[in-house]
Every structure is written in C-alpha cells, then in structure tokens.
Image (cartoon, rainbow, N blue to C red; front, side, top):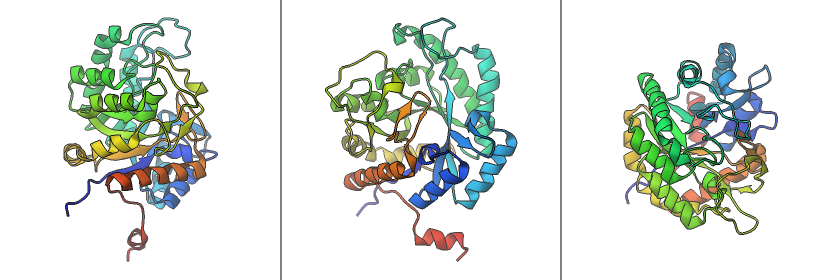
Length: 337
C-alpha cells in the first residue's frame, strides 16, 4: 500500500493562550502534541507585542523557552504587506508607509527575525488598495513591490508566502494567482485560507474554484473555517471586526474535505519543491479564530484550539492525509532514551 501524503501541523500559538504569554502558548501547543508554531503576538516578559516589535533579548528568551517545550517556528506570522498602496484617505485606518522606507526597515527586520527564529518562511500580504476602487487597477504597483520583497527574501535564503484575504488587492484566489504569475519569483508562494474567502460571500463551490486558481502557486495553507448564520451574498468589502462565526474546519462553509482531498495528490511534489528551499515540508497552519477574529489576529483559547485541531485531524484522517502529533517515542527521544 503506498504511503499517504504527509503534512506538518502547526498553528498560530497566540490563539491558544488567554494572556498570550510565551509559557501559555508553548504549554498549550506541547500538550496538544504540536511541534511547530507560527509566531505572531506574544508576551515574552515585557507585555504583548507583535513579532515585528520584539527585541533581540525577547527573541533569545523565546528561543530558549521553545526549546524547553520541544517547539520550532514554522513561519513568521508577520503583517508585511498590510499597509496602503497609496497615501490617500479612503475612510479606513490602514497606515501608509513609503515603500522604499518599508523595504529598508520592515522587510529587512522580518528577514532578520526569520533568521533569528531559524525558519525559512515569512507570511505576507498583497497591500490595501483604496477602498471602493477596483483591485485590478493596482496590479502593476503590487507586482512591482511584491517582486522587490520576494527578491529581498530570496537574497536572505527565505520564502515569502502571500495570504489570500478580504480587502487586499489579492482578495480572491484568482487575483492572488495573477499576482503570483506576474511576479514569477521562486521566493514567493501562495497561502490558501478558506475562511478568508468564505467571509466574502463565496459558496463552497466558489471557494473550491478559488483554491484551484491558487493551487499551482501554493506553498502552504492556513486552516480556519466560517459558517454564515444566514445565506451570504458576495461583498466587495468586509468589516473584519464584525466577523463572529468562525468554526473548526469540519463544521464550516468552506468545504475543507473536498479541498484537502484534492490537495493530497499535490503534496508529494510540493514537499520536494519546498525541501529544495530548505523548508521541512508542507505546513497546515491552524489559525482557528473560534472565539473571535479580526484584521490582525484572532483568539481561540487552549480549549478552542484543541477543538479546532481535532476537527482538522478528523478531516485529514477521512481524506487520507498523514500527520504526526507527539507520542511516547517523542517523549523518550526528548529524554535521550
């Protein structure tokens, strides 16, 4: 019998911690059996900070703590690309930073952080176009700026993952795939997130079509789902702070079963491509938001994160995708036995 395709389970550890302390995050993940985490928000001893704002001493403390809990960083959950393309007042609170300054400071900083945490992956986004305008009008500027970011990552032996999300230029799978096609850089891959498409009013069939559009450029997936309380219609702008109906991957409107069943056949080839870039495998990164989510993060609690993880594992078992959670052999290995 052929081996099942294999994925590596990871997650946004800040979602599993009530106060977002490093100890809470790492203890929850270790207890759930996870061995990788994405770092986004964390209290490393001096209050809750975004990963971009951590000091060298805080990074050092996190590295020591994560080793105690048997964890490694899968990706930097950065907000790179979540700024305005143009310095115009469009009624949003999104900030504008001149791109040359952004590339020299923020992008350079996230590359340094990836090296410090010994990960090859950086999560990023496709910039905010002015609210009310057609995102397609802004593709040339987005392609130029993301191409420069991808090249910076490449020179640092890193890979940028571009996440699909509402309100950004790459808000749909089709738009994000077109950005990927035009940038055409080996250091840029795509991150599929089904819930980020569902909240825009896509049906399960529509979500699957957006996944297919992204499939060729996929690097990894974020796993969360959403269940509309009433029939949804397509919208061009989403008020992310009003989203209240995130659910585990086996309970929502995304159709994760069909998506993951199709994705299974692509995993071996993707794994080989990623390993050539120094990445250990194909990550499924849990970002459940089951107790709430918004523009820059979400919350699940240790209980909600466990519920979401079990929902994902049931789906993976059903579609025949292999994964590993810590077992007694891992405990013995940690003891040197």
